[in-house]
Image (tube, rainbow, N blue to C red):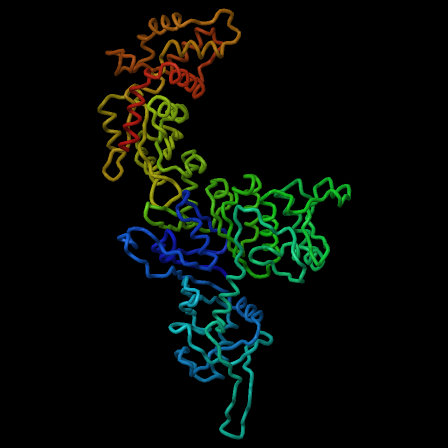
Length: 635
């Protein structure tokens, strides 16, 4: 059984979440801080509390009152075989509504045929959907239950009414009614045991209640589950408070599973060799941790109680216990695992959970490493617009498509995940240097903007230019993982104005030109400051006896700045310093003035030059800084 759909109404930051669909396996929930992730995780536990949405939309004036309760519409999907097994676990009395009760609508109307109908349907292969409407009203928590196909009883309308139930029991996979009397000699009538109760006696409700009592939620908080009273229970409670008890039973009832559990724990925490539960006084049991040393030396006096260990270990032990020992699928909610686990441990946990795909996991995270490790069946992206939260479901094929595009352009998910927008630039040099200029010269914090170098600017030229642009555009927008694009900023590379305009016209998004070029030929043109060049060469040329001075650098630049090899044919007329191939000039300058001891390397040396300039002569880069500010603000 798994949670197939949920729709939140008037709950915390959600006015209407719209219908969100999930699947077994790993469902990842992403979103910025305070976007509504925690509210969704709370609702997924299926125990709504009254917390209506508060905004101008629901409270148009300070005198307005919220009358509506918080609600949720959910759909559970259950395999018919699992349904029969769950019915076996429901304590008596067990019943189905009498056919003449007005809560049962439609055929069959005769008790015998009704029981046969249930048996025939439940013993066929297939699934059942339970559609349940929940309210935060504690007295009328379940508003309605509808079953598709119609096998179990529905509920709609009056929750206060007492219903008449035919008492049944399950024997060898067959539902049987309890006979109270049988008069075969008088009209062949049969009497069944009848009892009355409220809607909570419905089998459909009891299955729902069983399901939500088996939902486990783990979050970044130290769990006080090191010890408990021993009562002989084999089922881990939803709050994992009886972890010590179930571990104690597991070691004796199923040593194979116990061994498997310990092996998986050691994978995540290599310094832990064994986890056991020992009996204490007054019927108490306690979880103890055996380090590699304590286990190897057989020294129980070196063990530690779970309560003395770090946050995260107890959550991992409980999670692994659930996935290993549960006969039927369970639902596990994990809030930000990277907040209570080391990144490496969190990744290993996710990889282990993938080995148990029968369970359903809801994992809220902002870690791109965990998203790619999980390869989730669904990603739910939560966005808060300042008034309310909206949720979008990213299907697996869309996720796979986007990860493939990332690979195609040479960008990792961690490069772009979590940004508000992206500014694509010429390459790794600009990717490192532009943020420095914006922050130190323009005093413009990047905040949510990420600057990323394109893999190959050559791809953005020629007959495939439009196709490549569309690939980058697909990375940025819609309900995908990645943020929208601001613009591209590329080098001019000696192109005339007509060619630059033609290329700008190729790159259009919603009718807006998104390709821009640096005012100078390339970024290195902004770094031709003799003082900075002198400092960087002297820093790297450690074997030089007499340090280089800036006069030598200035003279070298003056001597060579009109060399034809640094200009394209289009620019030979002006020979302006703006049009010079500054990267080639710097390569020759570094080589000649260091006597080939220092090779000009990108992006290292441009970054070192930029650092010196922003710290010592920031005004030298003020024009470029203003250009970048205009791009970001008007993007």
